Amino acid sequence: MSSLGNFVWSIADQLRGVYKPAKYGDVILPFTILRRLDCIMEPHRDQMRSLAAKYENPVRLGIEVKKATGLTFYNTSPYDFGSLLADSDSLRVNLQDYLDGFSDQIDVFERFKFGNELATLEEKERLFLVVSKFSEVDLHPNKVLNAEMGDLFEELIRKFAEASNEEAGEHYTPRDAIRLMVDLLFAEKGNDLTEAGVVRTIYDPTAGTGGMLSVAEEHLLAQNPDAQLVLFGQEINDQSYAICKSDMIAKGQDATNIRLGDTLAEDLFADRKFDFCLANPPYGVDWKASEKTVKAERAATGHLGRFAPGLPAVSDGQMLFLTHLASKMRPKHEGGGRAGIVLNGSPLFNGGAGSGPSEIRRWLLENDLVEAIVALPTDMFFNTGIATYIWLLDNTKSPARRGKVQLIDGSAMGTKMRKSLGSKRKELGDGARTKIVTVYDQFEDADPDMSKVFSNTDFGYWTITVERPLLDDESNPVTDGKGTPKPDSKKRDTENIPFTYGGNTDGDAGRDATIKAYFEAEVLAHVPDAWIDHKKTKIGYEVPFTRHFYKYVPPRPLAEIDADLEAQVARILELLREVEG
Image (cartoon, rainbow, N blue to C red; front, top):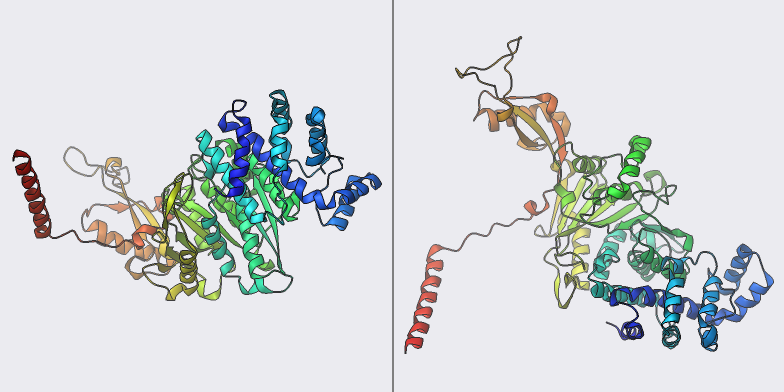
């Protein structure tokens, strides 16, 4: 933990006995936000107060404050951390007055129910101690950069999560994973982003504490200091929203662009599309709470809606965020958009032909939206050690990439950490990140051990239903009134036939010939009385990622195994002789 993180965490010592460790964050996090805002306002305090005395209209006051100070918020209270401590007897009342003096967009403290915590701290005689401690640390951006502030919040959240056995990963994504996603997201549009005065928008529907948005902004400004990235985010968790919003306010971003709500139940940016989108939605988490509204929206919006391609099982909502993100990309005629999303392995292959997940993959691939899928190392995230993948979407692919998908295996690129953080035991260093981005840039010329390029149709298949006749006691087929054999449901089977079977590359155009050739070679050759129920034929799509990168490792020779066993037996006998001796 950083020295700043240790100092702020040490303030929690004042809470022992009053709060359980799991509740320390209810006090420390909002106080950290308040002190950050207090330090930002400090150089402009007199100016802000004189403007507040002059302009009663809050809208006009906000305009004048921004014009005079560059800040997008203000406070009309006569108090600050210094003057609050000067009147210890009225500390809670004055502190509440200070909170009430913030401009309307500073709604972050009510998300922590901070007023209740102040009352508890006063009652237990801890309020003065906590305010005193926070007054000792200078959190002005000149002292603590925005990136360092983001790291501080994430360190604190991790510590509080450990104390309460919660999952820190529910609130934020590791910075190394974010940096790779951002590198890949901006890689294809690199030249466009170096123009003087370029303005772009970026959106995260699962914003958490804002880490992804912050890293994206840092990346773009490092490339082009004259660029402007306008940040948008929606977050369902009150406290994560509060931290994210306060961070955006401190950066000078428009605070109204960070909104509180369930993205699946209601898209609070329904009227907007974005240049870039990115997300790390929860894995394997059900969407029961949003099910009714999601299905109602899908029925109302039809083929134009964000959930039109299909619905996954209610037990896992990842793929809803995938189609949502695809729908938020700026349309082609406006220049197009790109998106990156981290998912676990199941969206690659779950669900058979015709199912919701398969239909989502079908829609993405048939509309040529999937540009690349990158396998990350396991043990990369705080709350899971399972395999994860970055999906890159683009609705204006470069000519070389059209109709194709690049699979990149970065699973071996992780470096073991000296100390684990929850389930996170590996990290992606700068070299590994550069290597993956280089492989992405090289596309069809990349190392085949790390990268493979496929046509969209390579992932498609037909599922056919194979029937066999129902037999009577004499082993003769049972027929209907027209003499047609009745199928035996107990012998019914299905077969998956790749679009490319037999070298076919025409997709649906070669469907009948391909299915006929497969059926004759793979089915009739073994069960000559079988037939296909063509009415039940379905189209499916899956991405068998691991199969494409599987490397056969032959077993060790028997002679080598026998030699090892003999050596071990000899060693055991020698140890026994020593014991007997």
